[in-house]
Amino acid sequence: MKKSIIAVLIAIVSAGAPAAFGQDNKGDIIDMQALRAAVKTDKKAFIATKLQLTPAEEKKFWPIYDAYQRAIDLSNRKRALVVEAVVGKDQDLSNAYARNLAIEALANDEAEIRARRALQTRLMKALPPIKAARYLQLESKIRAVQDYDIASIIPLVR
Image (cartoon, rainbow, N blue to C red; front, side, top):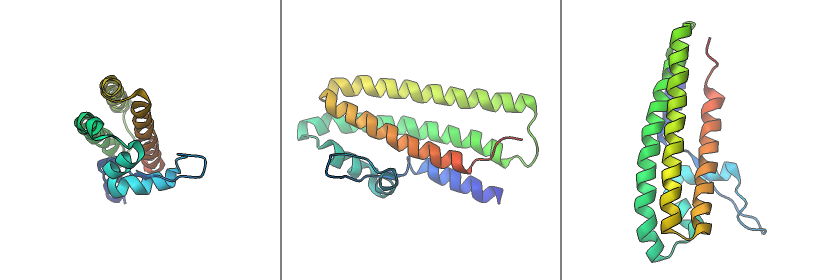
């Protein structure tokens, strides 16, 4: 049972934040269930559709996007290790071990924040601010879906 939970968690984290999109007549309202499905299918195509970049903007944007995705993938792998340590334990955690896991989780969150700050700085120089902000918002929504999916399957530490 615990191994299947770990496998599901790692699949979620490795998938690069599953998600999808939906629109209504009022504009770009994002349906979180549709976001999950669209990103799982093809995140890059979803982003391209939502940003509608010019060829000149694409030349600047995609290398920034790829670098950020590599940073987030590394962060996701580290997060998976922390989660696996919690889920994989078939016994109560010691206080020292729980403290170390909490420190690692927080360090991982801080690394993600640094990566997002670097992303924002680069995007604001490369794209019109509205498109940069739109991409940042899309990544935030994708991350929120991923975080929810992970949180929903992880038991509390004992």
